[in-house]
Length: 345
Image (cartoon, rainbow, N blue to C red):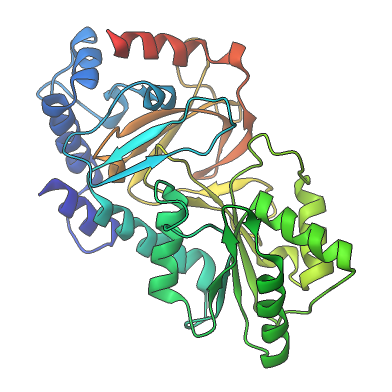
């Protein structure tokens, strides 16, 4: 089964090459994804004429708001948690075991280092509270696979459970066990605001670290990154060099991580099963090195839905990875909009 062979490639357990798997993934989508087949037909492209992954038609992330993209019956359904009035993206995911393989291949390397079964504090709602959250799916797997004794989730429908969080932080300060804090940026702000209000600070053990993901998505309170990093050091004793940022999205299966010791702010590394391009928003042609444009991601692990995604994020390709610049304005999404119209037929 192709998804299993891609999972083996993700785990580094196979001799299959990226290009061969990309060709097979396109053939699978050509057969089972009518929207992609329409785009390919318009370009005169078939599995027999495909020469490289760059030719595979782009699917804008906008399409996940209006159509079902899946090459097999979904076993998980993930919905985005955007602003209240926005139409959510829906990812019909047939291969959750492939999603877990991606987490196994990326999270320990990015976050754990020499830590073995550290206690983890999750500020991400559990799957019981957020059953259609891809982030909750990920954190559930992380906790089951690598969390040590004393780990707990302190988030629910009403936000961060501050008293429970304080109890966990106090325990780690006493027992000197380095911890991993798993959170969205907004939940971190909630925690910091509570600690500020109580004028309460902790000094977590050396080696403690933070996994931080997501933006603020229209929330009423936010901190810019230097403020957030300073607040984490002030209230928790975690220095900026121990804060790892993850870039992911509901429409995607793979994740990208920053290296906190990297001196390039906003830079993310790209795993071996992913390729990326930076495209002109109007023409969707590749820009020159050092120029910004829309980020396009070819993700073998997204074989269940759309392998070549055009995001709404502006980025610059940078030394084998990319640096996020920001979110594209509506006026900059002309190429995405035209692609969405073509997909709809």
